[in-house]
Length: 240
Image (cartoon, rainbow, N blue to C red; front, top):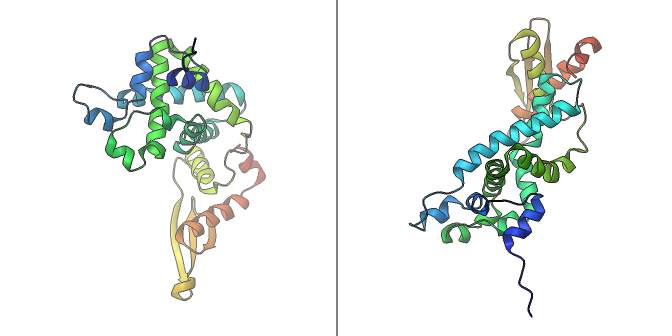
C-alpha cells in the first residue's frame, strides 16, 4: 500500500504553526489577483484578506511589545512595531517558510518572477494572518505570530533608534514641542564627482545641528546625530 504525499497546504500549516478548520480561508489567502484575472470562474483574490491581516498583525505585534517592554514610551513601541511588521520582515519570513511555492499566480506573473517578488510574499503572508483570524480569531493569529515573528525579536532591545537618528529626533521633537525638525542644505562644496553637502537641522532656536555627507540624506542624518549628541543626558533619557 502506497502512502500518499502530504498535501502542500498541510506542509504550509506546519510551517506557520496553525491548522485551518476551514481550508478555504487558506486557499483564498494564497490566491494572487493575477490568478483570478486569468480564471473567470474565480470571483475573489487575497487582497481583502491582506487588508485584514495587516490590521491584525499590527495589533498582535503591539500587544506583544506592550507586555515585553513595560517601561518603554509610545514612540519607542511604535518604532519597534514598525520594525517587526515591515515589508522587509514579512518578505524574509515568507521566504523562510517557502511561501512563494504555495501562491497561486497567473501565467504572466509566473514568467516575470512573481513567486519570488517581495511584494507578493508580503501580501500573501498578511493574507494568511487575516485568514487565520477569520478561521480561529486572535488566538489563531497569535499562534502564527509566535511561530514566525517572535523568534526574530530576540535581538530587540530598548535602543529602538539605533541607526536611525532622524527617526529619534523626529519622535523627540514631536513629543516635547509638537513640531517636526526642519532640515536645509546649508552648503554644497567640491567638484561634481566629489560633492560634500552640509545640512542644518533646527528644532528650536537653541537646538541646532550640522552634518556633512556625500549626499543630502547622509548630511541630514549626520546633522540629526550631531544635535542628539549635544542634548543633555537628562533630555536624551526621556527619549528611551
